[in-house]
Length: 204
Ligand code: OGA
Ligand code: MN
Image (tube, rainbow, N blue to C red):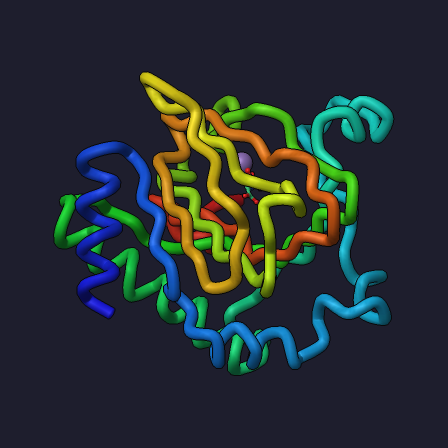
């Protein structure tokens, strides 16, 4: 566990991002999947993700096509809590290793239905810089190149693509790394979150 945290800290310090496989073990991924939260009959609990308050759904559709459902650590089922608690440990580790002052996280479940994508963007909102690190953990077993849906990160010298394979965690600086989700050719699911430098209770 600590080895993974160290790899993440090193990656963030050196390159602004890190990719770690088996952040969730196969069993941990399967425990989450077996809750049925991403199954057909649960999808009505997801809502179309937005891109700000002013754009309509029409514009939105050309920018991002994912559906989300926010998680609450207090009511989340145990397998999800295992993940959220690990993110808390990661944040506390990064605070010590990189002298950050992360105080909370916000995480949603995400579904990109077949054919959807999210165009190039940065994760910090205008006028709100509390999202310091983006953290995404993927839950897709048997994902192949042909399934598309890679996360493309725009790094200083090149763009790099990473497949959304089950158990993989990708963490990057929310203020620096522009990225996009390439069109997925099958449904693509993940837990998408941000480590914040402000506690959620104080946000509003
Ligand atoms: C996002 C995002 C990337 C991914 O939700 O802001 O960029 O790989 N997600 O799911
Ligand atoms: Mn993003």
